[in-house]
Image 1: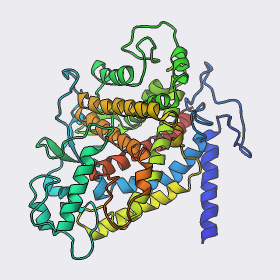
Image 2 (image 1 turned 30 degrees about the horizontal axis):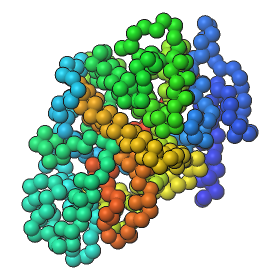
Image 3 (image 1 turned 60 degrees about the vertical axis):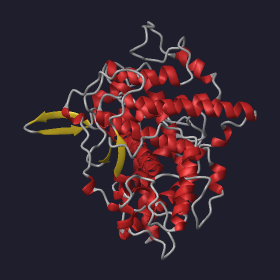
Image 4 (image 1 turned 90 degrees about the vertical axis):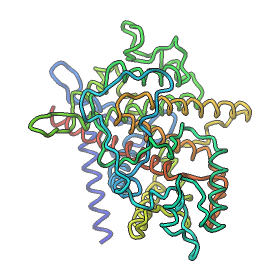
Length: 487
């Protein structure tokens, strides 16, 4: 049975490789035995039919190639991470979408009703999730807090007088640690009356009509003020910057390559996040709105406008490679945090024991797949110089990213704000994990850790943010096939 399964999987992988990259020339050294062709299908005017033919080979700042990530993600990770985000623990996200923009008055608005986010009535949210952090850990028999006791608490994190001394001590430890921790994101106050649960499955990320100056002001503020970039250096194809004539942005990349690794990584993370969001909008585009129902689906023309080599003066391929780079960063964070979840004390609690057990089993299965991937990003190369300089740079890195998380409250579209906040929080949690290696290594097996904690809010954001990246890479495969078929 195993031999048959392996043979079948091998056949699928082979077919996928040939179907995906028949028009592309493999330039990296690990292409032994793969077909090489230097030409691609072209239209009558000489333009490549597929803007993805240049998306191949080794990524900058790491030793992984695009093709390896494609196969690993699309065959092993994407099907499982999709199932995981459909589980109750990961589908409900508590968020405050009414926080005012701290930087400018918001005058943006959506052009269609699908910008609206429908909050989830708390009666629909599993009791275990509403109980906040009370069931962050499994407890020894005889010390489990009864659900009725949990529901008596008026605020998340409050210590109920009926709780055991062991639970009180654990909660106090969590509070002290969370208060002292250096977060990479501006965290929502989950106790705020404006914070609401959202069912992510009922509010999918897709095109809402939110565009123009309001949307570009958000991204412009992120790139111009928070990516360590001097104003004299122009980001390619920035519609809010003064015209640069025929400047193709090479001066920008000369500047970027001259930066230290940490600042270069920062830019590539933001660019990768931007690319991923754009892919989601192109893949879930409003194609038709008639007869009382909207039709959503992939918009090839919109995809080409954002990523095609000719349309973007070569910028599109760089954007997509930054998506793969971000995928590796978050993949590495999941690899690093696996020991945290592998402990028996950690329970993804919803109140349904069967559901919770299946959810954790699926999560651990994904971690085991991640461990088999041979080409992880090596974060040890970051902040590895002079200790004082490295500490200063790390703090600057953290504050810049935290500021970006605050800018998400300036997004004028509620649904865009929801997914922007979630994915920014997820990336911030990934960075927190990568910079907490020693604390994770020293986790106790049977008791709460005082050195490293993840709230449910962070866990949900981390997994959903990575799932969005996984979906983007899967959708790139679909766009590749559509472009080939159209040609």
